[in-house]
Image (cartoon, rainbow, N blue to C red; front, side):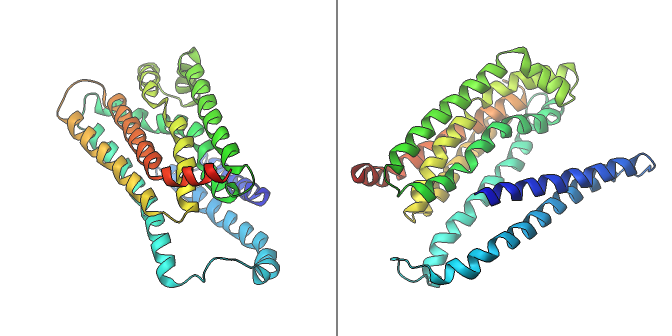
Length: 288
């Protein structure tokens, strides 16, 4: 896992390097598109550099360890691979579909311009906390079979969810939120105020992220990847229904209403994963 961390750092260095070069070039350029060119070039450079670094680090594993590895699992054929991989591949694809749905819904709700203006700042703030839970899925898959692994991972999931919720609450309920959106994100006073209100609707996202990652890890470990796709479908159903209701009403600013619906969608996904992973939790709990 240390190599993964270094890979992320190489990506960060590449991104910062490209952005710094473009910043210097921008002083002597009047090209209006330089900002978007710099952003896309930085992201592309980061992905390529990280891929090259990981390819270099994994060579000893592929050369020395994998050829001698033994497994009790049956050989992997095309049918088993497709049935395992396709649902996993569809899950992030369906999840990404929520983003254009949100922007389309917000544009049809009250205060559309202001809401769309603060959306990148809101997404960035919430992702700071949600990103912590993303790698937990892989941790569950890798460690759940170890002695006392299930109990330890379950305990960590709930403790981490509670901790990140309390940390977010501390920030959102204090002047730190307005300072973040006004100073760090660079929003004007009115937009920073709206963002500080809308972020309350996103308080549960990171906490649900830990729970969902835990249950997804159990399902992936048991090769029940179809249930993961079902949970994302449940999430999208709530998103579509909620945004349709919001687009025909006049209750709250679009950003606030959209984040409420997004949180409800995450809760629905969490509930479905909880339900579908019950046999795995029972089996692992008895094994402990």
